[in-house]
Image 1: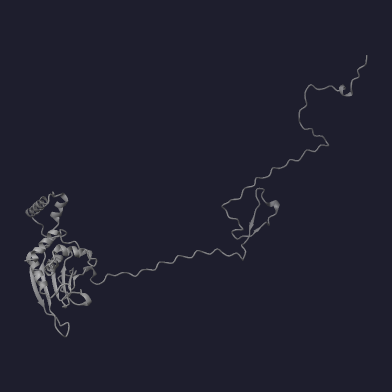
Image 2 (image 1 turned 90 degrees about the horizontal axis):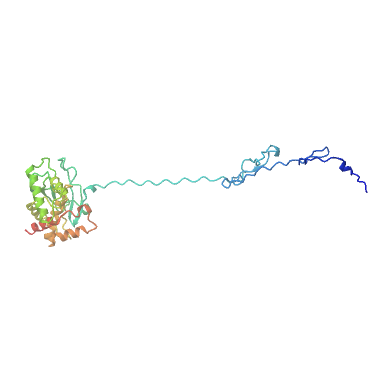
Length: 328
């Protein structure tokens, strides 16, 4: 029987526990050096321009050991002399001031020629002051007017015609100034109407509205009570006054639209009596031209050379009244 000899390694008794898996540092063993993690690199900003684009020179004059670990520090030096400076925007040119516009002499009077030699205009603003002033308006070619028809609320007589001798305008003949004054009713009287007068006006307005198949509204009622005629399209002149104006123009020497007799007539009226001035002229033109008043008014309203303030001022009822008086 073979004798069992134990091995040298078996002479050391084994531990019942497993050894821990820890590194054993011996004298001749060197631990590996730990590597430091790299710092994160920040991405460049897309919106910020680079210093090179701004015209600066980049120099790295700071030692590496003094630089921060995150990103390298850049030193900006002065721009090069050859770099062109950015031009400043040129200032915008100032607008040229326009020359002031001044109204011409007598422009507010709206002088209008209807036919050759016959004019209408608003009266002088100084008429209410009572001062006697010569007429500043002139006809075509700077000629002075020879005949005047004055419509005013300040005239004492209803109809008054006069002839004023003047100095000779030429060596050949001395022309006279003919004037016709027609008194107008006051549209805005300082004396208030009585209750009976107001009732009569409202009763007449309701009867006129019923004849047209309408009813008098509240707005129409106020127009009747407070409106004394302006804006209604009807003249405040009487039939005798229209006849006097027709005869005055007929004997003035106007020879129709193609007037070459040297006669110049001016019809003046207050600013709130435009209908009366047109009524005076239409009564004369209807008889001379042999044309109905409505047709003349329609032609005048369609003409581009006539100022809008003299258009559409006569109603159809007033046109019929003017034509009826003109035939007398």
